[in-house]
Each structure stands twice: as structure tokens, then as C-alpha cells.
Image (cartoon, rainbow, N blue to C red):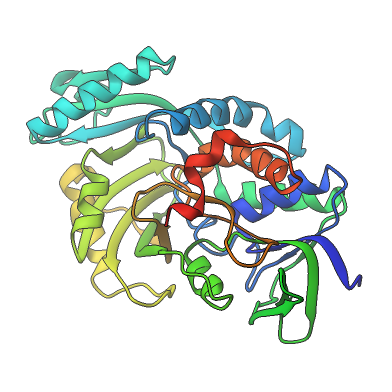
Length: 375
């Protein structure tokens, strides 16, 4: 194995794998290191929703729009199926203040070319006949997308390898070592590796890794849990979530905010029970699964007899301003970070191209607002 690479990527989630693919197709020598299996962290545990509704206005919404267009062609580009489909999303609105906010958001979305509308209670009942709608004013509906996130990770991994990238799962990064005054090497239990550029795309683990290089990035995370049911005949027509999702999960020490969609296999993927945690772990809690079940049955009482067959947990990272950190870090001249994406599945197909260009020295003024130097 070569002792030196153009780029070493730390983190084998969606961002790292997509970046490895974009760099390798440009004939850059790439080594990706992942402590566990590829896609085993937050990326593979996500709900698979290609979000639009909650996009931030301005640059972020432009990335969402471009990302949706890319996702329509991405299965052909990567030569792999990942269950992509267009799917409507319903954000259930219970309070007048949220009705006003979502009415304004839907107006913004339609003005910028997205398909969206506000549904009153009768229209909501027609859209989801099994949903108990009596406590809701209605819903904000938007045409989004849905896919299998683990299959998308695998598709990017196979495409990156076809272009020559080396991907090493089960290879933990233990720290960094200085090489001269302006660059760092990557240390694993068995080797010390050097590269022209070292990229940290480790999601919730990024803050801990960067601290080992003497850099403080205020990565925060919640601990999120999900469940999946046995296969069912068609019972759900949209992705369904709650209008106050982010308000609920970020402002309470322990909370449930239900979101669910029916997969192509017929199973229901149900998210999420969330609590604040000081340590990253992947264990389910004693309270999370029953709490999700109770909340789900308040919305869909007809699902009482449905069996749960799997559950999992993963950290969900974010930065204080809920924007990603993308760019060069102070100190070492070869250290780049890309983490804490908002609406990751929708934006990564485009952001990975832009990040590859930045690493190769191309101008990227459009991403200046995501510069980690703001912290």
C-alpha cells in the first residue's frame, strides 16, 4: 500500500463516500478510513427522506433544488439502484403559530419552483385516510423524495472503488501527528499515513477527532432512535412528520417526534425518540421504543396489531446555527472538514462535487457561509 495519498478521508458515511467518488473520478489518489462498516453511522440509520420542506432560505435552498435534480439521475450515474422515488411529505400542524410559519414557507417553496401546498383538515384526511386528524389544523405538503440510505452509501462506495479509491472499513483513526509545521499525518493502530489533504467527514465524531489535532469545532448531537415494522400492505401514502419536529427535539432533554414512511418492501420506518447525551453510543433506551409506539398509535390507531421487527439508534449531529461546516481549518495547512449537514441526502450529491473542487483548489465562494472559521 502506498505510503502517501493525495487525499485521506476520515469517515465512511454518505459525505465521505460521495466525496471519495467525486475525487477518484477526477483521478485523485484517495484513501478513506472508517472505524466500523461503511455507512454504519448516522447516514445508514437515517429515514432516507430527501428533504425539501425544512430547507433554509438562500444558498441552502439552491443546493436542495440542485440536489433533487441530481438524485433523479444518480442511480444511472452510479450504476446502482437505491430505491429512489418521488414522495410527498406531510408536516402535521397543530398550533396556529406553526400554521402561520408553514403557510409562509409553502409560499416561499412554490415561488422557487417546488411543488407544495397547505392542506386543511378535510384535505389532510383525504390524503391519509388512516390518520387521526382531529387535533390538527391541517398540514404542509411538499413533493420531496425517498431512498434507501444504506444502499445509497453502498452505491457511492462501489462507484468510488471503480474509479480507484481505496476504502478501508474497520480502521479507526487514533489521532494525528505533525509532519513539519504545516501539515498533519493520520495515525491508526497499525500505521502513520501522510496525504496532501486530510478530510474529516465523521459526522457526530468530527468534534472528538478534531480535538486530537488541537482544533475546537462545537459539534453537538442528539441520540436518536428508530423502529421498523413487519411488511404491510399499503397503509401510508406519504412521509408523515410533525410541524414542530426541530423545536421539539432540540428544546427537550427527552422527547418523541414521530415521522414515518412506508418503504418499498412494505415495512414502516418510524422515527424518532430523541434524548440529549454526553457520549456517542448506538444503544436503544428502555423508554424510547414504547414512547414511539404510543405516539404512533395516537396518530394511526389502526396500527395497534402491527409487529416491530427491528430497532436501532445513532447520533444526529448539528452545529449551533444548524448549518454545515465545510472548508479548511486553521492551524494545519492540509486539514479540511465537512460535517453536520442539514438535509444531507438532498444536498450531498451537489455538495460533494463542490467540496472536491475546493480541495483541488477551485474557487468556491458560494460555500463561504459554511466556513468553519465562523466558530
